[in-house]
Length: 194
Image (tube, rainbow, N blue to C red; front, side, top):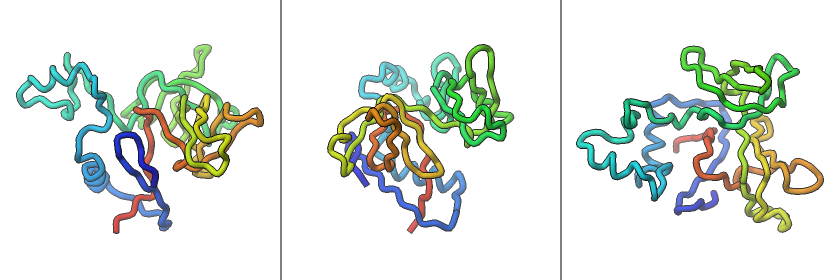
């Protein structure tokens, strides 16, 4: 594992077997990782004082001021740039767009592709496009410290496809060699309890 900003350290490994976990186990792991506080809260969050003064109402309830729901950590927010992948309609694979909304009832993202075209796609058919991902710890010193113009995660190869690092095109890097910007949504895979 590689230490991240703020002293948090993650180690990812694959144990095979294709086991999955239920929501209760996932929540337990989340509490273990983040028992020191909210990792997504900024030190200069202007809403901290407001919520601290409201007795019994905490941000973790999911209700923000004005009755609006706080954003879900497991859903890409409106406006997030994405690239479509693994669709049965192959002509849309590789198309870039933005998240318009999450359709809870259908379990799909509505992705705007521009020019009035939008598609409702499953979560596995969307890859978040991340700007400003930084390269670290590779055996290629000319790449270390560089910042990608765009990065997407390729589930098949389990590598980040980094664009704009070299004149030769896309560079594929292991997750431990990529530092993602704060507030990037990620999926944690292959977690095994000991």
